[in-house]
Each structure stands twice: as structure tokens, then as C-alpha cells.
Length: 378
Image 1 (tube, rainbow, N blue to C red):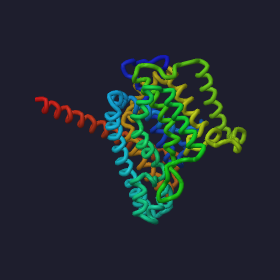
Image 2: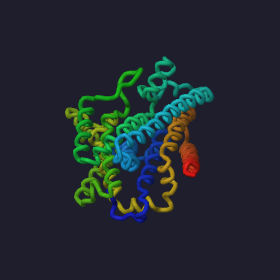
Image 3: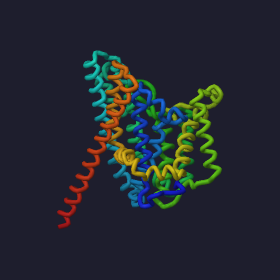
Image 4: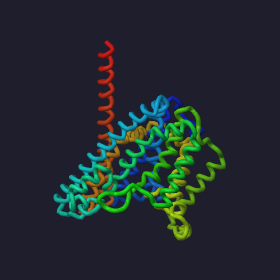
């Protein structure tokens, strides 16, 4: 997909720009209780920042691993599995930090309500069993569901990329069939030790990631997977307007069809049902083909957002721990509008610091690796 105009042809920065917006949106949504969450994307359509983030993760994975996968599936798997392993350790770390922060803050403010929320109560009922569930992804705290999903998708990324290189449309058809079967039969990865399945079902969400992979592979190969067409653009824009009207004016009773399959006519986030799927795809199509988005992504004022987007893992991890800690404080002391603004500003500031540290450490690692290579060569 390519917009009509890209101001800087040497470096298309839309991915980092849009990913930065998604990260800010996720953080605001994950700190409920502030007036600012009323202005995030989920209030204006069927999907939210999670779908957008997974879609962009598929694009990023394809851009990162297509070259290796073309050499061999094994090389692609080595690179993607290394990333998945990093995601796994980050997930475990932030899960522990979140638990510690809730326990410590609850004791400090004298309010233990949060100890029973966000699936944390299982840890206190049976610590060892819950710990086993955490390390196997069977037990996930609330707001800590994306990285386990991303780990699974990253392990499958080389196979997806290989399929997208050979037959992209057939690959998407197969992915859609898996999505439809999972949503129709409610097939999901199981929770442990609690009942039920993952909050974000990998068998369903793989379709969002797969679309991103196909777009990313096409971009890497120098072609457009879904080129601009006036009729398609108009249809996508119309769908976004209708979805916005439904959400803003609470018109759900006019569109809900309880007698029809939920996967096709419902709004269940677990199985990323069709209305949600179409919404994120329509939004992506419209944004990608708007020259104003390309201009904004390359503008000086958007550098902070691109900076967050280019360091997404450290930003997301920091924001996840902060959101749980801030929820615990706000549960005991509900904030005013001004206090809510200060809280969000503090949280976003901390994420910028985390992104800066990640940036610096990346530069250091690169220089060390270059020095080591030069030493071996000499």
C-alpha cells in the first residue's frame, strides 16, 4: 500500500508515526478514569489500538525478516524466534513488576481492592500454580495480553512470510478460513489455572497479523498489495463514518443481530469479529492512501511520536507497568481532570525516558558489535 505522496522518498516513516500514536492511545486507554480516554480511537469505531498495533506488527515483522526468510526458512525462524524469546522475557519481567507495584502501592495507600482485579487474585490463592500459568502464558494479567499473542505470531512469522512470498492471496484465504473456524467454534488457547481462553485468541488474531505480513512483504518487494482505487477508498471511508455514528450515538440496537453468528455480526474482541476486522482494515486503507498522513509522518512536529514508535517494545513495557501502578493509585484517590492530565503526562514522560534508554543501548550494542567484528577481521 502506498499513498499518493510521500514527502521523503528515502525513508517512509509512516509505520513509526502510526505505531507511536497507537502506543499513546493504548496507554491512555489502560489508565481508565481520566477524561482523555473519551477521545481515543475506540470511541469512534468498532476496533481500537490493539488491532492497529497487531496489524503494524505484522508489517514490521515482514520488513524485518523477509530477506532472511527468502534465504531459508531456518534463518528466518532463528531471527524471529530470537525476537519471540526477548518478548517472552520482557513479558515475564513486566508481569512481576506489575504484581510487585500493586502489592506495594496497595499497602502504602491502605486500599487492597486492586489485589483482586486484573486476574491477580489467582496469584494470592495459589501462588505456585499461578506462577506455572504465568510462565506458560496460561495465566495473563489484565492489560498484559498483547505480548503473549505477539510471541506466538512471531514464531509463525517465517512461515507466513514464505506463504506471502509465494501466493499472498491464497495465504490470506487460508488465514481467513482459520479465523472463521476459530470464531465459529470458539476455539482458543486455554487458560491455566483458571477456566476459559486467552483474552486475544491467537487463532483469530493471526488474520490481522497476516494482513500486515502481506502488506509488509509487498512493500519489501517493491510493489503495492492493495493499490488506491476511488471506489474502495469511498467504501472504506463510508464504513468508518457508519461505525463512528454507531458508537457515538449508541445505535447498537439497530445493527445487532443476535440470531446470526457472532464471528460475522458481533463485536467480540477475543475473536476479532468481522465488524472489528473490517474497521481496522478500512482505517488502514484510508490512512495509507491519504497524502496528509504521509506528510504528517515526515514532519518535524511528529518526531516525538516516531521516536516512541521506533522503540515500541520498551515504550509498551514501561507503559504496561505504569498503567497498573497508576490504576492502583487512582483507585484509592480518584483524580480530577487536572490531576488526570498530570498523571498521563508523567506516564508518557517515563515512556520517553525508556525509549531514550533503549535508543542509547541500541547504539552502544551496535558499536560494540562493529568493534568486535573489526577486531576479528584484523
